[in-house]
Length: 191
Image (cartoon, rainbow, N blue to C red; front, side, top):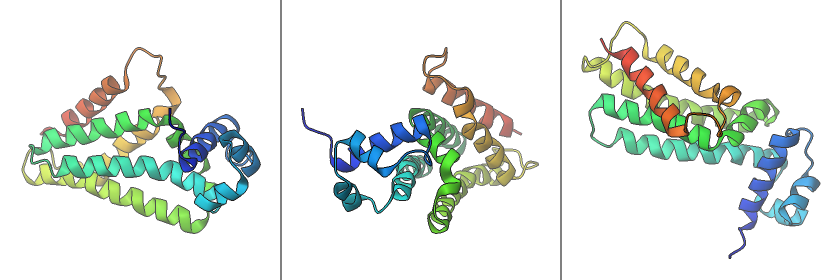
């Protein structure tokens, strides 16, 4: 079995420790000890604990953005693309629930420049997601009496709330929850 690369080990250790103790109560020394590396190795890959937090969320957002771009470009009918995009963001959020939870609890502790960059990345994602709703509204597939930006804010408010109630040992799988959320979104937009 091949040993996990150092950056991945650091991210795994940081994610676990941030989830258990919180970002502000976890030291760099604890992270490197848990990852089995030296501080020098950590600073070779990450300039600070702040960089680890930024990367924890960044990897999830990159994954979600790549998936959304594929869905948008798929050529499927707009309602099918919106359904797939909505389901994917729920499933990927659940699959990475610790990462997302840690980030939302600790985002305010990022440096202003990193916080600004994350907000810009999230805004780009939301704009692309919203473009599906706007496309459906232009085509007459979705109702037009609800502004697309309000629909997006409402939907993502419920996605960001998943960490409060979702449990992997609960009665619904991530895919089932994703399908329910996507059904509710698409059905609510039908004229």
